Length: 375
Image 1 (cartoon, helix red, strand yellow):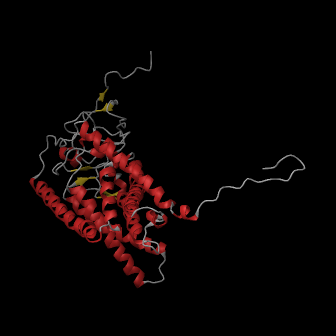
Image 2 (cartoon, rainbow, N blue to C red; image 1 turned 30 degrees about the vertical axis):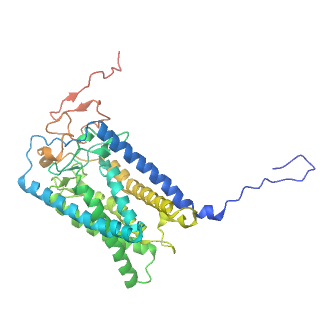
Image 3 (cartoon, rainbow, N blue to C red; image 1 turned 90 degrees about the vertical axis):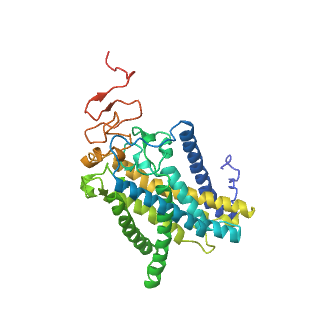
């Protein structure tokens, strides 16, 4: 800071930052983000329980075909068995043996929080997809996120066993298998750099995703009803598959695989870096690492998948006829058995439960108290 004329200019030195503190910043920042995500999880699930919405979603007047009921039970049982096996291998057995949670164990938990917080958020502004009501469900805890807009969100049939198990088995293990494929690719082509490996991983994940989702859609386990038809396979049917869904979800899934694959010389992922510079008991470091992985995982999911999917859902085409005649695929959110027309380019989006809206019969429903803006 310059003083009066004739005096020597003086400068105020900035306080130096301890290098140890600087190196510890990544894990602390991501742990703080993880704590925010967990706070949101607790809020949504508490509101869901206290609001009385913890009940099965309305199936509506259309009976579920027997073969779809059987398919739902088979997949639920498969996911429960697979979850028990994977939880034992990556979470319970390592903890019993080492008295600490492994990185894979923490990622396993992070995948669980991704389901518990964000799975149905693509429906945030208007209904884009829904699960078959044949699945065991108690409505939609995640749809109690602040600002939820699409009609009757609490009625979404969020599967407890199938989708929760899918995140903990198929999706988590898919990232593990992808890492193995990346190691193979690096051995096969040693000159391949990080960008090449990430591109390889993305293509590998797309093959897995398309291979899983196309059969599941054909079985009617869920439906991307609000797809943009020109950008979808099998458009105009309940099993239509938007290509951008695979590309966006593939980007998030690939990022989770790369998070696991690329580690520093201490074996820490991007989110955990700096934890070794923190002077704290081991259990506190474990807690920081877990929070950090939860923070980065949910941030990856919302930024690379949910936000762009929500945008695409706002430009969806009309629902296929073979969805509109199946109330077990709309679950009391729109269409049969409700007072709300399903999304359509000609149907205005609702902005909450007390919004003026179009009915399935094509008439306007104007809630009491709607203000007149012309005297």
